[in-house]
Length: 126
Image (cartoon, rainbow, N blue to C red):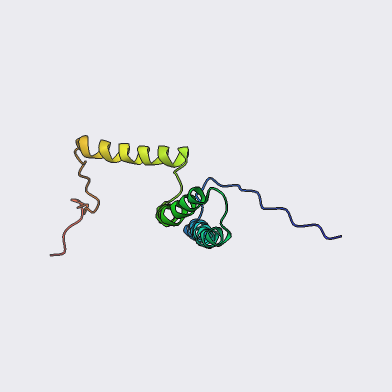
């Protein structure tokens, strides 16, 4: 009997990659649009079957067909919410920028790096 390999352990606080996020949004979009198609098919079946409370069921199907594309696009274009660590890192970066812009810069110390030492005891060759 084969054992299924265990899922890898997450050892980083890094966010999901852009490809993983995109794939998840694509799956949600296709799922929601499939439900919309099912609402259309179900509406056609309900009309031909003449079920009780037909106006209620048709209204629900119509709402699904109208609202699901709008919600699917909103969800597909949205990124996952930031974690507390990401929000804290963003706030710290904004604070560093604000501090750098408001604090005066210290006067630089001018240091001579290259200088020539003249030995007065030696005669010059000029």
